Image (cartoon, rainbow over the protein chains, first blue to last red):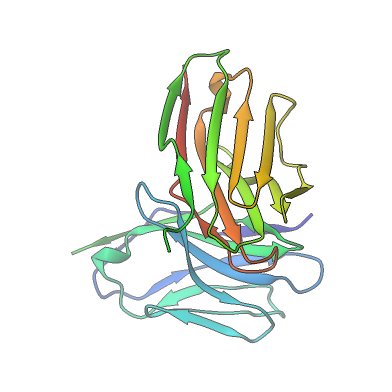
Length: 110
Length: 113
């Protein structure tokens, strides 16, 4: 069945460091791909999305490119801030069902 | 827009009791989703509705769980009887359609003692 695999956390970085969170997927066809972010005690918020191969989603300095050849959708940010501390979820949408990775906790220290 | 509204935000109950979680989707959204989040299993889709009709309930764990959507602005998820292993955060989400961006509510944290 369809699945999403993320790098394990927690990831701890210093402020202004470069961030990469790896995400790979297994799916039939070409699903839409998403990154959601969950701040402590809150629900999930859509961070960015890509609907077809080679699309780049971007928002708030975060970017991810839909790579069909490597079935990946890695999340990157050039300079993280303390306020980026949260749990990040990679997900695919297959026929209306969102399938999530296990989540990666990011902690950014001042 | 108020976003997706869930109630209660926290629920503590004893094993064997009935629990009802409530969700009001964003006005105009046609699809509604119920998810469960646990440390062990992560985020799982329980059921989703399109135009108030249940489309896929394959994620509902067992017969103790039931969900209804009597109209476009309200849905419930009921657990009867509840068990300690049902303790989790339950999220409701809505979207314009099944393939569109899903907007999540703040969740209901359920603790079954």
